[in-house]
Length: 534
Image (tube, rainbow, N blue to C red; front, side):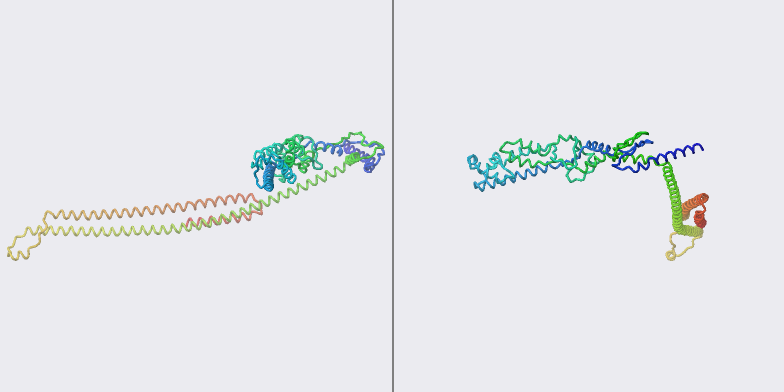
């Protein structure tokens, strides 16, 4: 309570002080006379515009002026010189032919006074490229003057060896001490302040001569007779460093943009004395003092407004975050739905592939069964043939025994006398010797046994191939069943994940997840039914 009373007393005192001075301070304008001494009751600062402008002006001059250096100026000068020299020689030789009828004169003609009169008349008519006597003798005598041209070009290049600037500066451009030279390929090239700082270099301004001074130095190298030509050649020398006023002003403004001079007033210090005329700086000080004396309630109101704005901004940010979270949740749900649809499509595709594989395996199994049946039929045929062969062997054996018995019986019968003619007519064929009968029976048996062995080998090979085909069929069926088991496990894992997710989501997402779980269960049941069918 005591603190509140003290705060109220302080506010009242400030309001009283403001009521005493506020009217007078607000009423003073430039040119008015102060009616009383106005002293500061609180410390404050005010910008001194005059001192700030003065300091900025002095500091701006310390920033080097920016000059563009045309690096191609020397090449342009050389081309102009060669063109002028060749054109001057051509015009001079035309004049010699017109006056003398030939373009090459002898020494006597060159030393005659008439040639001097001719040269003077020619130079008066051709002031664009006056010809000195030495060069005239060379051209008229048949010499192209290459050595003389080289000497003139060397003098020009020596003059342009350094930089040269114009005689006069543009308005509002002042050079303090140094200048920044920036090489460019063309004076019209676009140049930025950062590029000028990066590629430019500082040169003392006095080290770059003006164009008038450099041309005078160039002309002083020639004799009196060569002065007309020297004045023409001096015009080929052009400034290669030109000031960039706009870029210089930007650099100086940037350098002084943060300079600020302020006057500080302590408590009790006189702002304006009685009878003092109010000027611009005094008016600025009074305005700053008036703003300093604003009631604390206004500051509190501003602070409250700022706090309210910050709170509203915070609520807006929270609402935006919630909207973003809901949007992300919706996107997640859409992604889950898309994923479930893709999984359903993949399951359908897998089911179709598995169905085709099952059909293929069934066809292959049918083919294998047909092969097994064919092998069994073949084995039965072989067995039946073996039985027939055994019967045939038995029959052959019985026949052999009968033949053997007959042979033995014939040897034991009493011979009957038969006429020789009848013996010749009824003489039987040579009988089989008795000692060969066992061998014949053995040979027949071996032939039958070898046939049986060969047929048994064929039967065993057919059975082996049938067993191998059946093993391959079983193996392929196992391979077909393994991916189905993996898909069943994947569906079960996905259902468990969706069930966990269902427990974590809110009520508005439960229906969607239930539909997903139901769909996955249907896929699982269909896969299980197909596995049982296979």
